[in-house]
Length: 287
Image 1 (cartoon, one colour):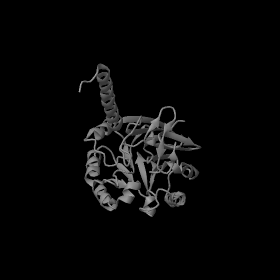
Image 2 (spheres, one colour):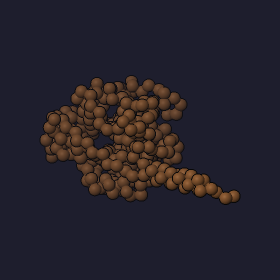
Image 3 (spheres, helix red, strand yellow):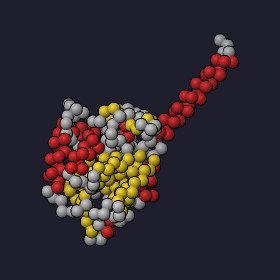
Image 4 (tube, one colour):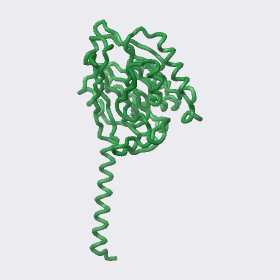
């Protein structure tokens, strides 16, 4: 069958649009952007000036084949924090997660808190054992002190609320009381004036603020998965449509929360206007 010139032109246009879309999707889902935040607080001890924190979140077993660890090494942080969903419960690979942590554990001390995917995977105990072998500090419902030349700040973590729900209704259950009670217990051990919290869930920012946490690192929202220009994220778990907390630094009173867009995908395999993100926060004393 002979194709008319107009038909050939149509198919050529369709071909190039398809190729362009594929290239765009590959770029959107694999080209990591480094987002830098400057955080200032007069309560920060003097020896924590210019203290650099790299945040890794929502990797979901994605393998960057050394590219991600190379970027972290070039940043040369004081600590690395991992805020959950290092693995994906639907396609769990402990080996990929451990390989990545091996690549970064000589760069800086690593502090890790669970996400819903760890708690629901059925393999979290195995992952914890492997992380502990690599000297990763797991701060699920735990408090530790960070010390720099005699100055001290606190770092604490909340194990993801899915620890209570496992399967079933974890997407719909109200975890507010669990978050409040966990923070109350954590603050019983706090002897520091400035405190950082690692918690996978950003939707509880009001609780973190009410408990006077200074700086929170969170993830879970995947940047809203699809970001609409000038509007923001489209949907996020536990926040629904047009979620409030998906990306960047949010401030309420004396509390600030950094929300990572994450580095991998789970149920929905594509990011749109929402490249994977490595977050860098530098602490400063002056405000």
